[in-house]
Length: 465
Image 1: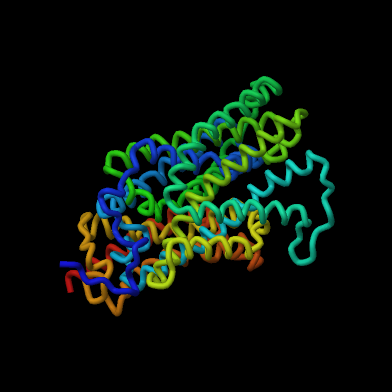
Image 2: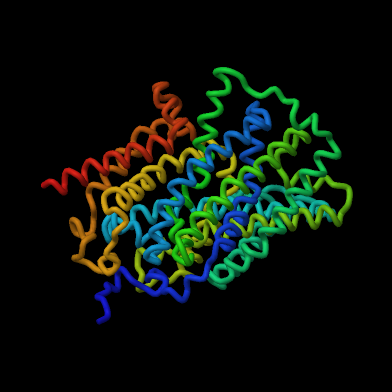
């Protein structure tokens, strides 16, 4: 008998992935992470660590530890996608309730819109750099926008390319990642070899780095930023793992693909930045003497940005927006909404405070959601979900009119300690007590741990009652 499904909770994009569509193997999972990790923001994050005074070794250590930390919730939450074939917003219904899940989904979607805009701006920047090399003269900044007409044109062109892949659907993403992965690694390695042979290895590794208190003061905020970098995917990884054949494939594929690639490409960013003193790879590649090398290099950077943007910043919000009204919003329409919001937010403004305003800021929001999901699935429910009830009202996940108060309370409590530090970091308040600035260096960790603990306590108490 066909299970009962509420039109407000189900459409074909949110439905469990059938067995014959679970075609992703270990290679596809690893390629996905290569395609997402090899991107300009990865390079910029490592470059920011060098600018802060870290040595190459210190920056790579920070990146490696951060990726090993975030790999844990990544694998844990991916388990549900592979086991039940469900996407992230449906998975969140188990803990937040069939209606309350929209809180978690929209929070994740809005962060993705910001990331979509940032990545599109960066990819458009690669095209813009090619035009500058070709002799195009930059015009004056446009009113309100603050960028010139050529920059706007390049941004729009790259945005349109992203929209094309949205229209093509999930199969195009699998194809894009598998094609781009080896090319991107080869291009990054070529850049490293060039810096090594041109500037010498001594310039890369002679930096003394930070010592004592200065090291710890830089390490924790950057570690939190590194975890926050992938705090987005740590939530919505079921959007991909639902297509994976086995748990072994998703676990080994992620373990091979994420920490290794992210650490290696960060090493390229840190080493090349340290050797050349140039933090932006678009600027660096544009300064090569050969127009052919410049064009190929910048197109490679654009491809890297495209592969990351489509996988990391479209799949999740497309599903998340669809979760708001499944009978009216399809995956593609959700993707178009993402692209539209990513365009109108003027994303070039978000890059002005990249680490402490953006990465640590949304880590304070997404960390608590991650803690609630992990605790609910692995401790409260012991990996057992009633799939039919995820798609209907009045079932196991109805709670109080579709909302689980325990999850909402835990989310709010997990966010509050980091809120004053965030407001200070983005300049909305001029000063806060020093304790809040200290806490802000650990946003994701505080939110994840505190919200998870509160949620477990409330659910345990509820069961006893």
